[in-house]
Amino acid sequence: MRHCTVATVMTNRVVTVTTEEPFKNLARLFVDQRISTLPVTGRDGRLAGVVSESDLLQKAERQADPGGRRPRPGRRAARAKAAADRASEVMTTRVVTVPPDATVAEAARLMDRRNVTSLPVVDEDGRLRGIVTPRDLLRVFLRPDAEIRDDIYDEVIGQSLGTNPVLVDVDVRNGMVTVTGEVERKSMIPLVLPLVRAVDGVVDAEAHLRYAIDDSRIPSGPVFPAD
Image (cartoon, rainbow, N blue to C red; front, side, top):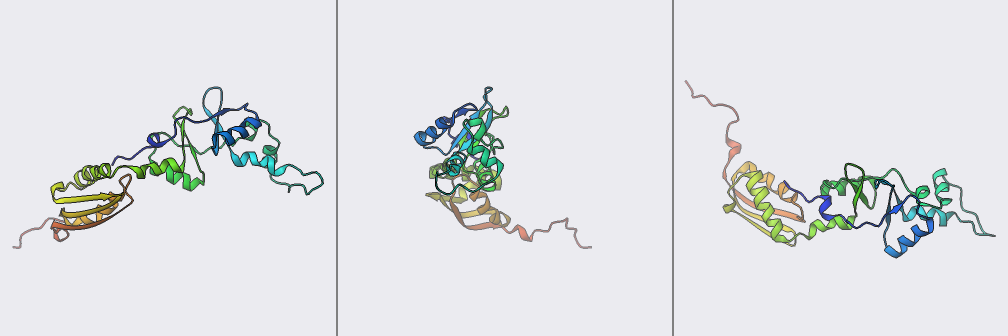
């Protein structure tokens, strides 16, 4: 079954900085561009790290207020970021990335599992190709109902099940799918909803199906005539 890939939904025009970008410029980019993550690239164009808003806030959090209470001591890494004055000193180098050919579902699972709000998209050479955010991943649910319906007929009814599509009706409204009609074998019915829900853009699905052959009654082994 075909699925939308990260390459089809990612943001291609990414605001990036080099490792030597001054701290003040980083802050300006976050404010002016209204972004939450800045990929940092090296001279070879490969991804070196990312800077987030929270990385920069380490400095604001740890600034002492003369005559007031000093900030609480913290981890060495946090103190180092608070003292940073360029991207290479404040960026996170252990970056969770995703390849362009990953599916939208794979990217969503990775984002949830690693608890990140964006994923830099890098190719096999480590070069930045784009960035994907939760908002980008939601684009899959904007697919037209007609496209979803065509995919269900082609990939589910025709390819996966191999039953006669003329006997099956697929209705799609705002991503909600209703499948009615008749499939060839009884064993196909439990497969319909999981396959339909796996189609990109499907919000939910229900099925009301009949069957022509009750293959649950067909013996699994050879049947020999009685003597």
